[in-house]
Length: 252
Image (tube, rainbow, N blue to C red; front, side):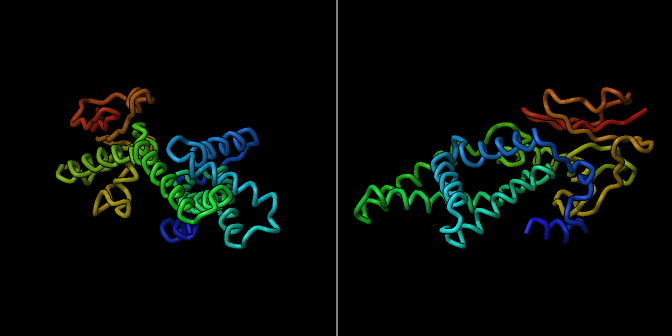
């Protein structure tokens, strides 16, 4: 599904801009997979269902001949998706597509475990509902990491709202049809209407490949400032919140 969507939207199975970022190294392979396991199986927001899912996943891999076909397909999908993200870093946000299947496996595993300890169906189902209610509470109370630029987190809405505010302001400027220098994620928002920020694409330059009179730069706190190596005449507009800013400048 992921590759199909990429093919339809971008004309190729990988997002073209990130082809040059495809990578693989053995150390990074283990580090990345461990980070993904912590995020999807052992995080405090989902450890009840996640841990059960992880145990069930490992058990079925060890006893694959006895595994139900549907469960084995789901497990294979999860593993292949995680491995694929090791070479294509852009895949990490799309790993959200494995979350429903992790939940399915986890709930199924919990149901099987509870069946061993509770003889009556009523007690088993009651305990399962209790665990799911508590898991839902943990998920909701931790779904905003407050990190602002985490694309697997609801906190990313802060990035979206800041970029949208900038795009709306730019629509009314007299110089909007000129070539504009921009960095990520601004240039993606302004270049591609399918991303939902603009109706008509702007002419954007990236990495100062050509002379531009205007620039729009996104910067999070503590991150390298793209303007530090380039002199600009004045700041035309500043959009900011508690986590980041977008500065619109006019170059000399």
